[in-house]
Image (tube, rainbow, N blue to C red):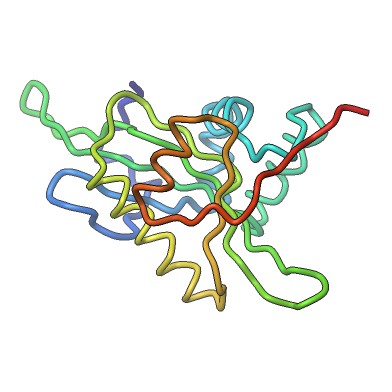
Length: 171
């Protein structure tokens, strides 16, 4: 688990989840600083239709730095040896997408990766924050796709409705 000191002023708190967990939306500059970590999580857990290659990762990096996409850190506060620290519990990358024919906007979860056990309460609160953020940006839906059964189970527990199944073919 990555530990980031609380005196690191590079992270700004977006919303307090509960007394122990927080969700932080990173700026472009912050994304650049933590890119190696964010890159690894995107590579492991990106949307099913994307191909994780250097071209895609480079494009995501450019969009994150330009704040056309957002990286979020889920963190918990801990105290060790009398010093307060923030432990990284998960990384989420989102992008606002416009549906080309109907013109509707949605907040797409591009990748999500947790570290260690995350309580459903913390995950649910993080999803609520993403929903509020999407609403504040004029989005009509929060959309998240997964190719992993355990993530699909979490999506259902969060009240998500399976709208379709996506199939891909390598060409």
